[in-house]
Image (cartoon, rainbow over all chains, first blue to last red; front, side, top):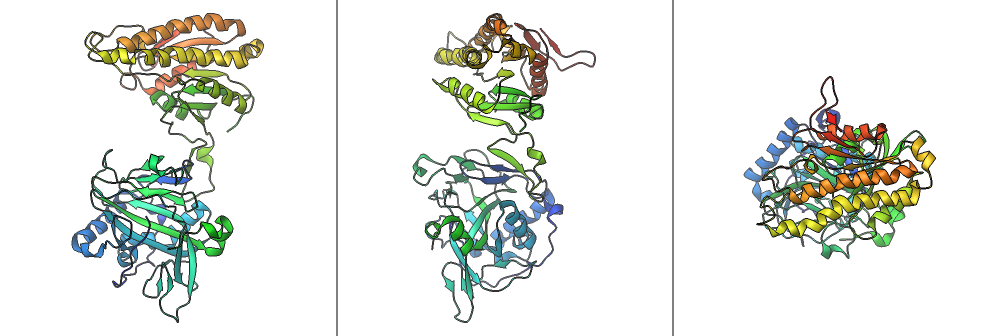
Length: 267
Length: 252
């Protein structure tokens, strides 16, 4: 979960569609765990009918437009496509303000309304990643958002990793505040299939393996606040592994005040 | 988590297993539970794990009764001591100790044709007999022996979770090592009861049939609480059927 890819494909935007989360969520007992660092897991996140819609959109995308999954993330053994290209269907729930605000409130984050998200695919035999904490910066067009609006990264105007593309476009630097993985479109997962998200106690202890692994079970999620200690990594897989990766952002000033300038990971 | 006078403090080992999980789920509202776990933890709120309502984050009602999880392999040197010290540092006392952790594997090839049974022998007797006795003795030494009056007032006691296998022979099941360790635990229970009577702590055993196959884990958990609430000592309570409308499903 290091990067999401840049693309020039035209953006389909349905982010203003109304999503009523109480009607979509299957239950309201998500589980927060404190070790090796605070994280939240939930299985059966959405009601079965809505999950089937999400699953169908993802599988349709894989079947009809596999070229949209691009393998250009350095040091990360996956292909990806930005969520912003797929907001014309149920996946746009992840680009809704209600989803953004729900997660911001869960983690007590003063979020900026800026979201980075993409769909990831790992072929069987994908290499395990090295632990990283996701406390990284991200750039967005500097404009005021409406209360019900979310701003997805838009590489045509502002490069997410490095800032402005067009001199006339003002840009703001944010820092990832919450990372989330939602698993979908996978074959039924069994122990031994791999593809888990590994959580680590320390970076230096990565050689001993993750302290906890979260299996990629369809319609489940894992999320955590991005901190200097939120070490996590993809674990090698024997079966295909698909997920949606998603980040909420906070202002850089907030991140620096909280974690110190030296803790921010720059691209 | 309340630590008020009325609430009883319960320490249960093997808390991540079937019975431990059922007990914690059913009785976290009634006891302050210390859940001693070696690998698995019970699926209930604890200091490590809690429920979050994604649409009402400030509502903590689902986490009102958290158990206190202590990770420990009590068979390792010094671990039982450490856990007893932790419990006594956190709470004002201990009212109920449930020795539930156990080695439970069978050896289908028997004794004669199977070295594995003897490879497991010492570990089974250590975990299933020695550790429960030592754990109870440590609580006695560090807390109970100087509080005989208080112990009787609060009806303090130990429940050693044994098995019906400790009373019966099941031919061909490969239970020789497991069952004999449970038989030893039964007799250890009787001796502990005799010795602990001096300072007012009761000691009983629980001998359930296979659960959840024959009886539910919840029924076995209820039997633990029944022993906690009664006044008997030195008994082995058999749980071999679900409670009947006119009875309780257990005999001693």
